[in-house]
Length: 160
Length: 76
Image 1 (cartoon, rainbow over the protein chains, first blue to last red):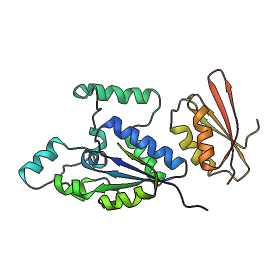
Image 2: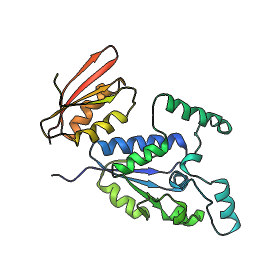
Image 3: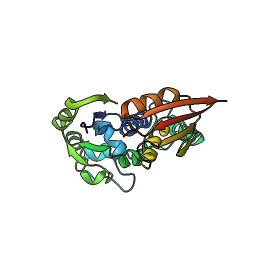
Image 4: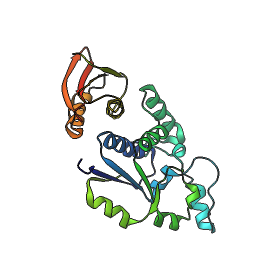
């Protein structure tokens, strides 16, 4: 059989709506028999941070950043109409209303289809986020060369 | 149209119908036909696209009162 077609997504944004779109595409691509890698970088790291517990980091600026930018799939905001949480809550209700899976369910589906989750080590180092901050589903921690090596072979490469 | 199995995707939006189709088809043997029930209009374009990429055969899509029945023959 021919080698599987490759799809890569850079998830740069840490907003709920953008994460939903990224996982929709990832699940769709995996369902079409493609090999999918998602690279989470910068604010996108918030999508794959665990929801429980606190995130420890060293130094005042990094501690402040991680306090204000806690992340975790359940804490993400809409990029528009967050309205102190009311808009995001309403959007989640609308999703339930049409039986659309929540972000956590989409992430589990993607994982079940073999989608790879890769966290960017540069963003982690800069922001002071350790490996322990992430969900166990993250496959690897890597940099831009890993991304480009995959993207070079990719038929579809997206930046979200 | 006769089918060997039916998948109910009524009330589900993209990409759930193709996600469930991909998983359900794994349970079928080559040559068997899966019937997919859906009411998201996107399936009219998506199921042919899915079949084209995955190399399965789309036998047809029937439309009746806002509901769709797609028939996919497992080809490999």
